[in-house]
Image (cartoon, rainbow, N blue to C red):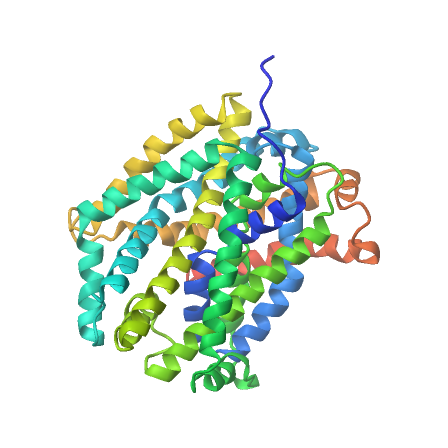
Length: 444
């Protein structure tokens, strides 16, 4: 039988930085602040923090257990570890693995726009007024040749990195980019602390009022805690499959959650400090970054040009670390299931990914009428496939995986809290995921 080459294992710091890098992407830096702004600020943050510590981390540990004990992609790991028939879990494994790859197909488009905004910042091409900034953003979206060219180059870059394996590709990239991201965000946070809007940003983010807690806020906070940790997409599972034996899963999760939450807080305070100092709405959606902050930077002269280049470069670096993680689950699934090299798996997946990216890009040019394929695909993935992926993992670990295998993976590191964690995975987490999914779909 042909043996599959493992292409190396993560070191402890490599796994932490790579897993945190998968979470610290555009979702953490862009989506967290605007959802927080749209959901009432402090009340959202408190619920988000509680959810990510007790529910998000619990589901993350469950996904890590599957990867760590399966030592393969989602498909092969689920087949190997189930106590029942592997038949139903095979298609589930493929769906979970493919979801992150589909996200990557339009994620590279966002990264292509980020490159454009780095250039606009450097050249002083950002608009001084919101209306003009909105027009520039629209022009960026509708420049199909540039977007498609940059997207294809990013696809080649990303699959090239992942094809090199864990230690020579994914870990090496994160060991370079993650410290750079932390350094840039740390520097910009220090600068933001000197602005008069810093105190207002702190008040907005951390001032808590019971009256702000609504079902919408609770559901948004729970959903964001799952999204920001990359749960339900087999990313954590795929990375955990490359952990060396004897790894402390619980400790690794602690570092990842801490780093992920810290960057989310720092980026939120930093962005809102700029917004409250120079004017803008904290509920401006993705326009918060491309339009509001773009306008802010353009009105600060040469300092704004520098801040714009640094800020959008940091976003781009964060996006690259996430992009690499999105490719790994499906590539690993193909690599192990069909026993082909990572390079061949990368080529086989890059071609359909590029095709899907091209189709989504064309929708911005009106080739499919008024249909925005990015919004449609994102809606299906965010509201259906990713929650279902998280639900499948919790059900699998709680009901279809040998408890002794689960206990062996955790290796006593939860101490007296194993029973509580197991109850969360078996009963509480699945129920919360179903509630969030029904709410996102407008059923509740």
